[in-house]
Image (cartoon, rainbow, N blue to C red):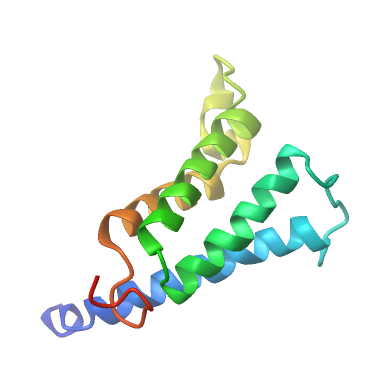
Length: 128
C-alpha cells in the first residue's frame, strides 16, 4: 500500500476534477434540459440549484476558488437531502437508501472534504 500512498495528491486531484465535472453536468441538465425529460422553470428553487451546480462544479473541476465553491456545493447538497429526500419524515424515510438521497449525501461530504483541503495539484488555486 505504500506504493499507492505516493500518488495521493494525484488521486485527490482526480477526485476533485471528476466530482466537479459530474456535479456541473447535473447543473447542465437542470439549466439546459440536456439528457433530461424535465426542465425546471427559470428562477425556481430547482433551477437556482442547477445554476449553483453548474458554476460550483466548474470552479471545483478547474480548481479555482475551490474552497468557496466546494463549501457552497456542500451546503446545497445538505439542503437537497433534507428538503427533497428526507423531507423531515420521522420514519424509515430518513435513510438515504430508502429516500434515494445517496448522491446528495455523498456529494455533500465530498465537497465538504474538498472545502477543507482546497484545490491541490492540477488546480488554478495551486499554491494557495
